[in-house]
Length: 80
Image (cartoon, rainbow, N blue to C red; front, side, top):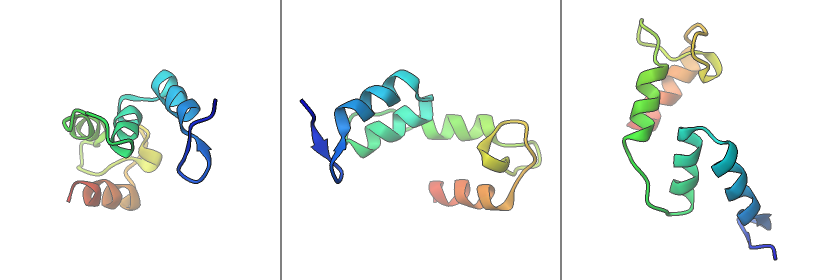
């Protein structure tokens, strides 16, 4: 049985996939979208761990890459 929502997407399969394969932040986002209980400290913890020493955030949000103005702005605006 397919539980449809979000424009015909199979939400049950999507939820299972993210719960099995997603990062801590991706699971948080899923819970946020579905209106489920979540730990609002998760995004801050993830951003703190990702931020480069000079204060920027890496390209493609991949730890170890050089900082990128676009990602830094996006991450900052997400917390505003």
